[in-house]
Image (cartoon, rainbow, N blue to C red; front, top):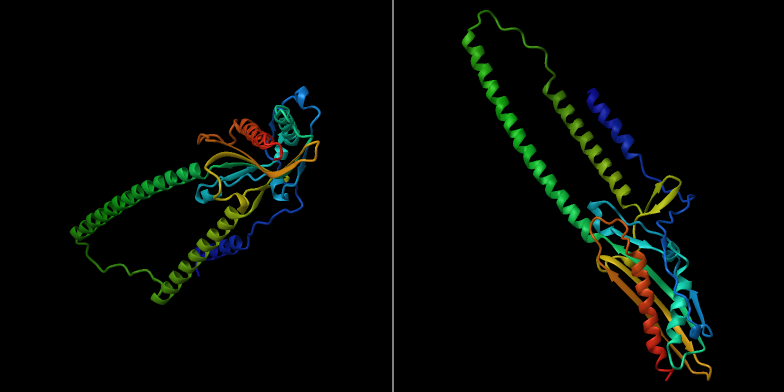
Length: 307
């Protein structure tokens, strides 16, 4: 076996045994932080007791960066938790609900909202898909140019070989020809070719499998923290490409005379984003609008007075 083939096998064993490990002992990246405006509670609403209870699942309390690799553009979905907004979103929701209830002619005595979901989703799959298609087109163009260049060089090489053969023929050198150097047998050449091809195939498979594990792993490390790159299944293929804020919870309105109304409250807001924005600056505005929409829905149900 040649040195070249031995070197290839060594690389195969090294790459094939290198498997990325997840550092579970490291903290999870908190992600970017955003400032959120809190509305001032008007005087007419100060007597209304508003309580927002956090009932979100644990995964909604973590930051997911999403994938930035064009080849797996379907995972380019970032999730921003409620903990990334300051002051806390709960205080903003409570102030908004209090002000909305204060606008009613017959306001409830208390408002309770069990916050079951708070999602800020930045779906960048369409942009990443466009980048991937552009990248593939550029690769095809480069590959085609390389093939044309290789063909041109091969024709040039053959042309020069023909010229040299004609030159040596025209010399009519006398005497016996030099003895040919010893060449390896056909069997040894065949064995070397098979070993080389097998080593190359093993190397290609090892590199591809390792790259696949790295690209599709649920998390990666950045310094001393873990970065969650793969979005949860709950937000995949569900939201429109762009920026979406969705708030869901169960609201309970109670009046002084004992009337009660319970319903599912939802506040949503959506904004398209440009292709060159990593984290759109409109994120706080989108969240604020979703909170306003939530308050308007609760107010409309409150206008019925529990009837």
